[in-house]
Amino acid sequence: MQQYDYDLIVIGSGPGGQRAAIQAAKLEKKSAVIEKKTVLGGVCINTGTIPSKTLREAVMHLSGYRERSFYGSSYSVKQHITMQDLLFRTNHVIKHEQDVTRHQLVRNGVDVLEGWGSIVDPHRVRVDSSDGHGAQELTADKIIIAVGTTPTKSDKIPFDHETIFTSDEILNLTRLPRTLAVVGAGVIGTEYVTIFAALGVRITLIDKRDILLDFIDDEIADSLAYQMRENRVTLRLGEEVKSIEKYTDEHGPRVKIHLQSGKQVLAEKVLYSIGRTGNTARLGLENAGLAPDDRGRIKVNTNFQTEVPNIYAVGDVIGFPALASTSMEQGRLAACHAFDVPAVSVPALFPYGIYTIPEISMVGRSEEELTQANIPYEVGKARYKEIARGQIIGDQTGFLKLIFHQETKQLLGVHIIGEGASELVHIGQAVLSFGGSIDYFLNTVFNYPTLAECYKTAALDGLNRLGG
Image 1 (cartoon, rainbow, N blue to C red):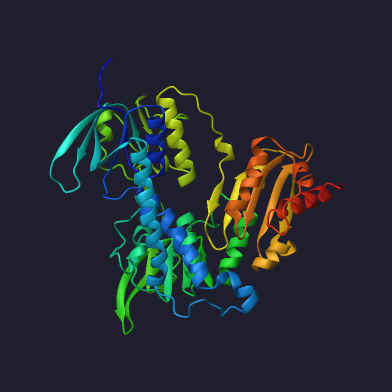
Image 2 (image 1 turned 45 degrees about the horizontal axis):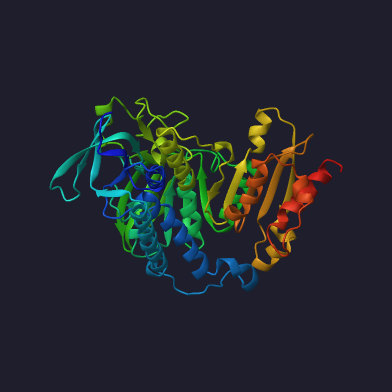
């Protein structure tokens, strides 16, 4: 057998790459992770998931948002909230997660190599040092690409990283703007819109699609749009940006956005968030006979193999759903397949969590999907305001929706908007995984008072709709 330096080399240390390397190490394979930055964790820890969710939690606390239904819309924990206030908690969590990631890799015997990784051929990887001095070539039996993505940009947009910036640069803001325009109503755009709106920033959200987050349940999307408008967010849906120009008036730098419809949007700053592009430009895919698509994404099969059998790709670089949780699972499955270890996963039961304000989470199928598939279904709903716990926490708008088969009562989907949605959804995920019906919720006793009671209330509502 040919001898390689490593059984597995992973390019990228984000959730997918980290989990792949550790899984291989637990299979007693010699593995290494190549990371171009001096810190580990990829976009997830450093500029994406962890920072945005921590920023959201800081906003929820300091703005007093959760308590406003009790103490009035003017209530806040701190009167004048600054970016420094928000970043204090964010930076602490980022540093902790960076340390945890490195510790997990080292503890499992994974070599961590700092530098820019690129493919020389299907079994050779070049590592160029981050400081530009020196390079080395390593060989591996298997290679997993987990390089993540970068914000998609347009050459027509005059980015200056201060008044016009992307989500990766949002932590560099030195002060909160009074007005903000957000171009792009995807997950990242809508999360930041609701975060800044909770702080009182006047937001205009622009997207050429007619609805928000077209992959989620329509009723949930409508509820989110309503609550965004209640927080003074202006929605410009079905509108396309023609150009963006910077100008200066007596108040300082400003931005003017020209829309194809002839409208103009004025704001202090612009967050440009029209999607993300695979970070594959300098990866050397052509040296292995591979080519990304026009958004830099790599095509893989159900086992996360590329067209070159010993090269795999996982995480955001392969496209939807591009979540940290799904990337971790993809990394685990790819490593297991690479070394012929059976592994089972059910992508149809992966939960989605969207950390807008209010929070959204879902698992299983939506009403729209079931309608298109001609599957007879019924729904049951529970509104937070009907539940004692909902009254205690002051969430008057949240609700949980169960979708189940009209004849067998088998649970088909769970959709939630409101406080704790991304935690609450896992109860429904468990019932979906064993093919349970809504009778499970009817026959189960939940702690009182908890939001989990929503499941029993929704099941009873659904049963009533069936005339039972």
